[in-house]
Image 1 (cartoon, rainbow, N blue to C red):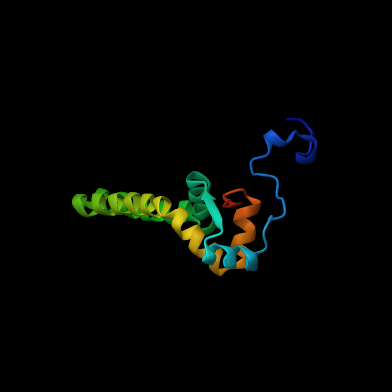
Image 2: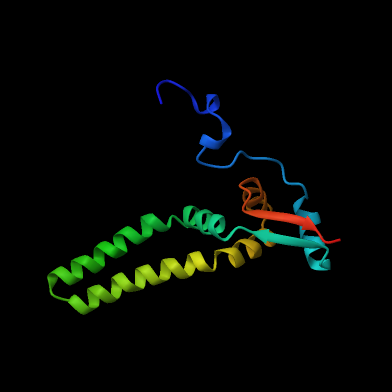
Length: 128
């Protein structure tokens, strides 16, 4: 990499999308969604990444997994395995429900709407 700054790299090297202004304001988005005038597309993988980062899932999952391993090592094997399984299943369920959660939160909070549209997780198109 050398001494090149992030700005000197081409856009496809960025680890995140380049922000852009939303095409529709939050108030227009909420009103048009209620009237059924728009089609909302949510990238499921992008929504899972956004929600994982927003909820700090890796930082929560690591201690829970550590607790499960510790329980298994101290002799509570089945309890430890159950804690590990619960942590893995809970994380996957959260990521699976991420698109619905993102849409619900985007309809309620202008800041979330702006963040997910700038990250290109949520796309709004007009219905012809």
